[in-house]
Amino acid sequence: MERSRKQPNDAFAGEARGEPAPRALWWGSAGLVLGVLGTSVLVTGTDRGWRLPVGVVLVLAQACALRWQARSPVAVLAVNAVTGLSVWALLPAVSLTGALLAAQVTLCVLSATRPRRVSVWALAAMCLPALPAFGAGGPAGLTVYLLTVVLAWTAGQWRRAQQARTRAEARRAVVEERARIAREVHDVVAHTLSVMVIQAGAADDVFTERPEQAREALRAIETGARSALGELRLLLRAFGPDAGQEGPGEPWEQGPSLARLDELADTVRATGMTVHVHRHGDTDALPTAVDLAAYRIVQEAFTNTLRHAVGADEVSVRVTVEGEAGGEGECVKVRVVDNGRTRQGGSARPGAGRGLVGMKERARLVGGSLRAGPLPAGGFEVAARLPVRDAS
Image (tube, rainbow, N blue to C red; front, side):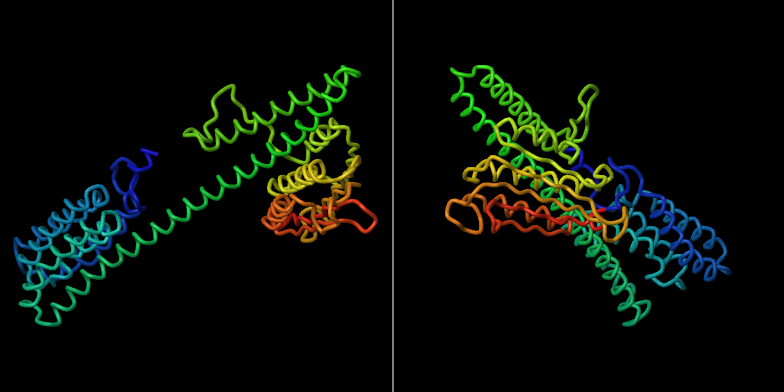
């Protein structure tokens, strides 16, 4: 974070740690000064003897100084203002606005890259030659000069505001991504803990009469705990200062995916519930967002079944990829059905509201839809349709 604070706020500021401005900025501003001011000096200084070469040298000095305008805009502004006034003094036929063109360009850069209090003082300093402009060109000369100076400062302020909006959007994207990661970890840990609670209860029930089954339940609890700890480590890496900088010997574990659906089903089977998994179509080439959303929907549906389905002992999962690969109609359909009952005959199981909202939000984020509710013949259904192309 400290290194990012030292970097300039704007593209005008060039590379980090005070290096010269980008070549495109320097070439563009120097080309403008040489093309406009340089041409004016050559035209008006033809019959001025020694003043012409001196004026040319001053123009070249301004163009060279522009190379450091992003690193030290205040100093470059002072240099360009002095050399510009010198050009105007040597060749009065050159307008004051034209002679100070390089200074105006630097004022724009300064306004974009430095705090407003600094740029306001620079703007005030650039307005000081207004009196000579009035004396040389009258009201028209004064108006043109002040207008160009204010426009240069305003253009820098607009650029600064634009960059501030860009940074704000980037920060918001980071916050949203971290919130999404936190939701992912919540889903995983909540599911794992639900399974562990049920397994612990089952182990306690059969500890004396069937010790081997109790040992299997305890081993499943250990496996679930390790999985939850792994997910928490991923969360800490994502929020840690060295996020994204994996060292040797620290590879990321395989993330949630439909390829791990059987592993997920095994954790539910360990509670004594019968789980049927059916796949139709190729799920290996799905976009990551769709793959993750489908996995999380199945996981949350399992969690709801374990927590809220009264008398449920069987759950069926069907994942179907429909449509031509890469075509507009390609989508993933996920259907999870259990044979449990709702406690009060409502449209949703008590306590499952947050889980249902989470599943619907996951489907919505990839452009899909989800419905959930009790079936007429008994049981509870979660059905989602996730388009592939929208998330690609």
